[in-house]
Length: 124
Image (cartoon, rainbow, N blue to C red; front, side, top):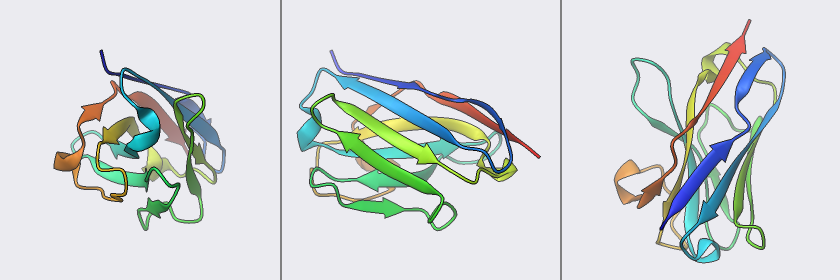
């Protein structure tokens, strides 16, 4: 049974930091590309960061230089380090798995598995 379980969300003031984690099970994590997405109320889900099986990364312009996506294949965990948080980063954050190991994409339709999300709230 495939599971993606996010954790680490919470409330933080602008300028603060959070680290999100996504624990994966039920599939061969190391061979999948992974992504972090977010969805704010009334807005479409958007990609934040993507990492392929080789560790190459891709970021949305809105988070470049502030967020870092990484993975620990030995522990089957995906991370999102978020620094210099802004109120506009407030959203539900989701991790997702894509079985194309070398695909770096924010195309939601290409992702096979999704977590339930963790809420991030940034106050000004």
